[in-house]
Length: 513
Ligand code: BG6
Image (cartoon, rainbow, N blue to C red):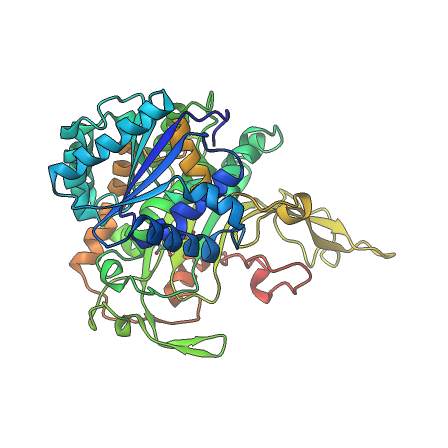
């Protein structure tokens, strides 16, 4: 979310430089920053890993990743050649002191040639069990000694529960200053997610109605069509609460619910978000029964293809009790949100990939129109679609053309693809540039991570203590277990129909009861 553009000479060191994240996300993002002239002229990227690569092999491997995964597609040879000159590879063992000495020598040479001190960005694209080893070595080697210029980027999972998150944070803050640590939640880098801040805090229109007096409830859906893919081994120890709600969905909730920040100073924004997490109501066992739903997909059909159930996926225990779907009704106990339910749900193997936030306003206090006119009447909704479409719609009633007064639902819509011809940057482009610029606004601070775990611990503990006897309880290709419908139906609502591409028919269950 950088607000100035200047980067200093920069060295990016990626631990796990031979891995999937580097290949699919990090290097395509950095290459786009290069194409957009956002990298400093003096730039070097060093991939560190245990695999065998010559520098040239490494460059070809990365080019293949760029061409497969970059939003810009195929790389132009002249441009790639220029960029590739800044890429190198070190086969190294993360546990050896010499590795860090070698990195240090490379950086010193780079700084000497650049004639300036470089921004040092150490990216831990490695499994969680390696983080402590790397962090400790970085600290001991003096590579991260200057807190003003050296930064470390850590990927989730940030712990497995509150206790392990605390100990991870303790370990990291023993070695680095908090301002050096950039914990990535890639949802915060998404263009449409950042736009929530613009929508709420750059417009005077919404703030007066953004509270319990006007908002009936909020729904957040992050649906995925994919199953666990090749990540069964990791996912089976995580589940939907840990994998998605602890980070992405709670962060979306914070952006909707936070108080207006005084400025866009990183700590100010993060303080306001953490206030929300602290205000979320903690549930007792009985309330967990009522407010949290878990699901696991069984075999099913998606668009005519038969897909396996979760327990049949590679790397998953055939008797697994891990949830691949979770829905929770949260309350935020503060003046703004008292008694306004926030329904959130996420799951794998749902019918489509879509992330949407629906803000449902209250009914009109008195219906002046005769019932014939208002047969289609529904409350106002503000619908923020984060992906794959990028839209903000305000649903309101209008008069249907004709001699009679008949109300009809209409949408005012902002659609990125209508307003802008260029594709917005990928989340990792935004986030990596922010790290280079030292802007931590869109990154998770230690206390945010811990506050999010603190909210989920009672649910995790209740679910761990009591296996679900009904798993699998939703077929792949459906919208999750019936209990998730009941969670909102009990309050007289439906899960809002998800926005269709323009021109497509509104679904039947659009109608509020
Ligand atoms: C990751 C989760 O953080 O987010 C994955 O670990 C999930 O399980 C992914 O698939 C979803 O991200 P996106 O950007 O595709 O919505």
